[in-house]
Amino acid sequence: MDQTIALTLGVLSSAAVLALTAVGLSLSFGLMRIINLAHGEFLTIGAYSSVVSADHGPPWAVGLAAAVAVGLGVGALTELLSVRRLYGSPELSILATFGLSIVVRRLIQLGFGKDYRTVANPLCATKVLGVPFPAYQLLLTGLAVTVVVAVLAVLRFTSLGLRVRAVASDTALSETLGVRSTRVNLVVFAASAGLAATAGALVAPRHQRPARHGPGLRPHRLPRGHRGRTARGTGAHRSAGSGGGAEPDDLLDRPASGPPGSSSPPMWTGSPRRYVGSPPPASAYSSLSSTWTWRWA
View 1: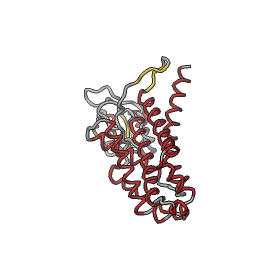
View 2: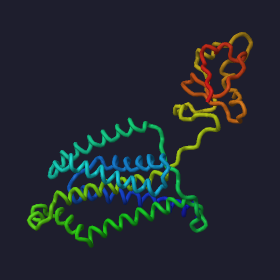
View 3: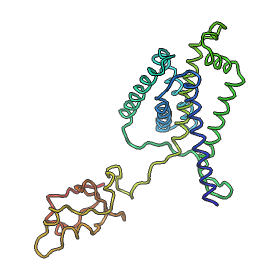
View 4: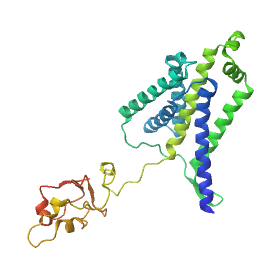
């Protein structure tokens, strides 16, 4: 029962974020007929804006506001420089926004690298029906649902929403009634990008960095597939033993001690060419001294 409650709350949290992202996408596609393949990159911009803000120390709410502002600005700039020339041409909008997504992705990689980045969770865990659950995910769900309802209410009950629906229905007729379609399209596309950035900023604190493999070790140096405790040598290494001593494979299967003062197990990295930790006695690996490179974490 506890697992069912936690799973249900997690699903609701994810669904709320997806709904927020979908509302932003529906503004550009459903109202403007623009197929925006860069919508995911707008979400990424919001997440990285939150990361930059967190690195400089402001509270999480300030980072959220900064991400929304950046998303609105990037969306407005994109509409002015590119999208405005593509109304009525779905094929060209696909190509243009796809190219924009590649450019944004590469710029983010150049600016931040490919390392895993995250934002500290601003809230502690709480209990829902006696089940421990992250309080931030509850806040995320409430904020996402509030924003979605607010957007739908604006479109349905305000004069701005009336103008947006008029332009989406018939641009030429709305122009004759005094509605400036270019301004409406600018607001709608900027709002679409802002909603995506909001979703990215809300998701950023939700996913935490994986735990490191013990003190003194640097797991980001460990290639995938080589994070085991020991590594067996190659065929050439197996024949490198001398006399009646133990075979190199047998020695390689024995864990050596970790760094001084640490109880952490040693780790092999590379394929396998490098070792993180303290080296075993030289006598045990005299035949492999020219093969292995020892490194401190």
